[in-house]
Structure formats: C-alpha cells, structure tokens
Length: 229
Image 1 (cartoon, rainbow, N blue to C red):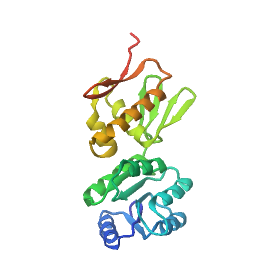
Image 2 (spheres, rainbow, N blue to C red):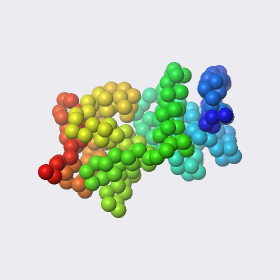
Image 3 (cartoon, helix red, strand yellow):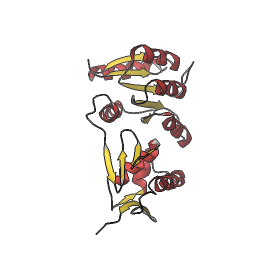
Image 4 (cartoon, rainbow, N blue to C red):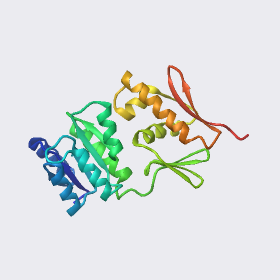
C-alpha cells in the first residue's frame, strides 16, 4: 500500500466517499469518527498525513491537532471545515495545520492537496525547500528564517507570503494573488491582515539593511535586495 492517511470525520457518508476514493488512488486509509478516536488511532498506529474535520463530538479537530503536534511536530495535517471566517482558519494554522479545505469540496482538489503536502512535508521528501534572501536563509519546509546564528520561527501565513515574495524577488506580487494563496479568496476584510503580516516579515528581515518589502500602493508588494555593485 501507499502512504497511510488518517481520516478523522464524523459524517459517515462523507467518510465512505473520501476513503473509497483515496483507497482507489493507492493510499492506505484509516478512519476515526471523532477527535478522541482519531488521537488514539494516531498514537497507536501513526500516519503519513492526517485529514480532520474541525467540528466533531468528544474532541474537536483543533484539540486533537494540538495533541498530535505534541507527539509529531512535522506530520502533515489538513483540516476539512465548514467554517469560513478568517479567525477560525487562522486558529487552525496557529495550532499547526499545514492546509485546509472548505466544505463542500471536489475530491480531485483534496487529492491534489494531499499530494502537495506529502511532497513538501511527508517522509518521502528528498530535501527541505530553501530560499536565499540576502543574508537570510528561508527554510519553507520548517518555516524558519535564519540569519547567522539567529533563527526565527514563522507562522504558516508568514511563510506562505514570504514564499511568494521570495519566488519573485524584484517583481511586484499582486495583493489579490497573495490573499488567494493565503486565505483562498480575495476579500477586502483580509487586506488589513495581509498588511499586518507584511509588517511582521519586515521586522523578521530587519537584520539585513539591503532587504526591503516595498508596498506598491494599489498593486501589491515587492521584495527587493540592494546590489553590492
């Protein structure tokens, strides 16, 4: 069998549909009906990736994720959620989720997300994904930013934003593109949050005076590095 997936979902019909689809894709799927059951199954059998609903009886997905993160800091964790507020999504990421998918969703999109998470965070990845930004090393896989012997842990949102900026050094990244990448939608209510995360990244990069994140008003943001020439 392929990678082992722990699916924690209290909707029986949805569980059957997802597990049948993933089994057909070659994955080894283990199911649980609530957070307490899911945590027990993870502690006894482990998994290569955990997919969990947020709202469940006995123990919700957030509480389960906290416990799993104490046991395994790096196992990929994807939330399935009917909630749509930014606060709920942000809470999930701060707990340690790697991705989320809003219900209802296409099974094909779930499969794409699973493959991406296993490629980036799973045990089968060949190496960490790193970016050199001036005097900094940005490790996307571990979500850390290093400058000499100083290492800063970034949040999921900060890492997603910095990944886009670091992939387009010297080019303006549209604010809409950043919001869709982070929150999966371009919403006016997200613009202040985006600006707040840009401010945090500027502070994290402050030790190299040649690095700037420029606000291209009305368009987006640009990561620049001054030339030494």
